Length: 577
View (cartoon, one colour):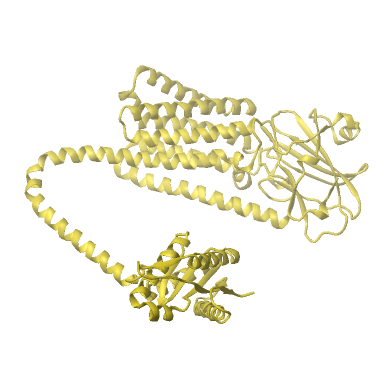
């Protein structure tokens, strides 16, 4: 029994469920009349019950020990069940009945959402029986959980971000390759555009947005039909694209041509079959055909790679990665591995990577063809090139000399000549940049102000040359302790040094400070004649920046803590308690 009043954000109901396979005509009363031995206990944590065309009833009990601060919802986070019915029962009394499914009108859902989401409202201190009936002709994926409204909105926001990024990549590739097709009039790009558009249509349907925003009524267009149609269209356009890309008709063996055109015929047959074939049978066949097709794409890519076709490297890599994600998805859908949200969207992730790599393969092929044209042109201009080589060589030498001089000048302008660390002017520029980034990224920032203890005495006793050696060694120790590429350190003046640590928490910043102090205290500086130990005092200030005008305050705090460390006896780290 689950107390919904104890649900903070979400609670997985699957381990608490009992379930039973039933006939479609059996009603709630029939199910309630069954004895407890008829029910199976769900001891699995994963959400996949495999391909099952029967009706499955799920049962559990809920109670509410005290009034809720926020509404609780029951969610079945999978958008492609044909029929879903949720009953909240107290004995023979039905407290609530909610229905959904993509074979019903979208408006019949209790909440207009792409997945099933229903409010759980039960009397306080009462026990309620929950019965959930699911009937589907596809995958019986049942991620059933209790979730708060805030958490549900958060989940949907994360998904919409992922979907936005995914379709953003798709749209960019469509626009980019449309411009290329318009310029080159190469039909290969047209087939690629068809493939990208088909993938986008299929994923739009699989995410559940098609049924939510376009075909709201199954009487007009069935969601199952759209899944079948877009899947067949995607495979057909993919095969057409591959045939055109690898120039199957002109450059391949008889076996390759037979396999390629047979695969095209099978894809076209599946596209036509989407208008009349049973959904479960279609999905099984199209998954097998898709797996074979991707395997053929991998074979063709590897073969082209071995034959020296440069673009085939990316081509083979794209299909290999897509094959891995398809395998992941199929294992997930068959229940062979524990089902996860990532497994559900494996096809989307794999297709985005595959389409991107194929686009790069296109660019690689264009470069290869361009190189061939340039080679022909170069043959005609060898004489002119020979005349200009001497002049080009001199220009390049002068350019390299100028670039090297500019690099040295830039290095000298930003670096302390003695320690090799940044100078104070460059630190101020970098510190302002880090402060702005910390504000924009809502990340903490720590500043360490460091002073070498009794440095004047070292200078007076051993001379300025030895003092310079101590400062050089101090710069080396600071560089050795700092490990993050985002950290910046500088000589701030005399024997003072400063470090800015972005993206660190309070304890990590203190650990860095203590590591520096320990490294200095265990170091002996020697010039061969005399040797001396060297310690430091460190002031550590930490903040979560919100206002760029307050950046000097953080430096001032670090300086104050430095003086506190010196006043307390030196060789220590001072920090806000």
